[in-house]
Image 1 (tube, rainbow, N blue to C red):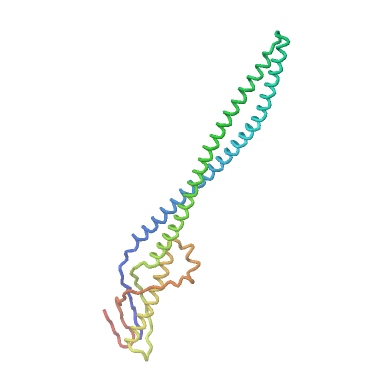
Image 2 (image 1 turned 45 degrees about the vertical axis):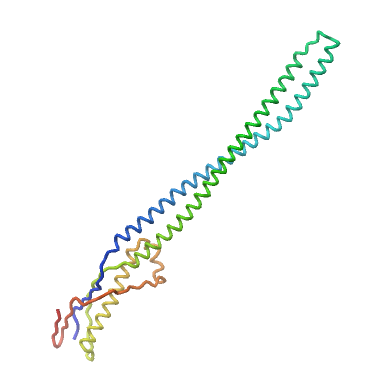
Length: 251
């Protein structure tokens, strides 16, 4: 005697597809934000490098101006000494031409004043540049914090999506035929068939879940460690029939 066929339906509403789409949208949105912020961070790093290089050049120029200041002081003092010497000589020789000495001293004074102005302007440029560098560093630090926060959100969203994909609900129908033992009652044989079909449906449903996972490529190799289980909300026999000696049918 055998049961043929025994069909079993695991009954539950299937409504999870919208949730999965929302989860994927959230993951994609966060991933896009991370990429955008990463681009901004890279651009900020490049800009910081450029400003640091320029600041180094400004400092080098300042050092040259300071060095030149010493040279100009020396030139001014020498020009002043030369002019004073010409004035002393002028007392003994009124026709002596001291124009070149005067011009040299005047030029030394002008050059020294110009160099002082250049130093002041250079210091102002350096101060402004350092302020810009400080702002860039602050913006870069803020971007880094934002990126780290988004990465946490991204991981959380992926985990939530995976959790929803694993906790999906659905219906599944299977058919199975078993042979009843001679010593087994029909009720016991039917119950045994139902248990076998439950296991069969559970495996197929679990296979389907893993097959439809968004991150199947990452999860599948670790399937054996996942410990995923199917919780049967309800089940019932759609149709059962016995064939063999003593025909028996149920609809």
